[in-house]
Image (cartoon, rainbow, N blue to C red; front, side, top):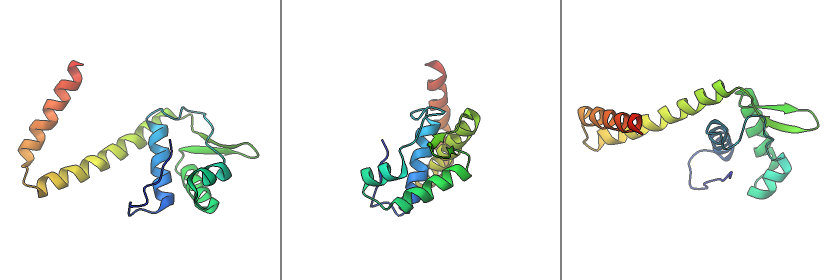
Length: 125
């Protein structure tokens, strides 16, 4: 469920924040569900518990999770916030792909045509 890519340039805690946010936004982690304890996740991923704690603190600061003292960290019940986070993440991914496409010689017109075709296909499903 939660994994780390050691070839990724981003820090481990940044990857954890992104991955948990993505899992929550996509509904894989349902609102109100409990995250693994810091110790448990650190053991599963073989990384320092301080790294997990830093990621959990960032998730709480961003509103993706909340902490109940003595019980653990839980996914927020605010589905609008999670949807917004997912859209932000998708738009960032799209931006990177669009930049690579343009650098690779694909015109903006072709990109727009492709996006319109994808939208039309999605609406017909």
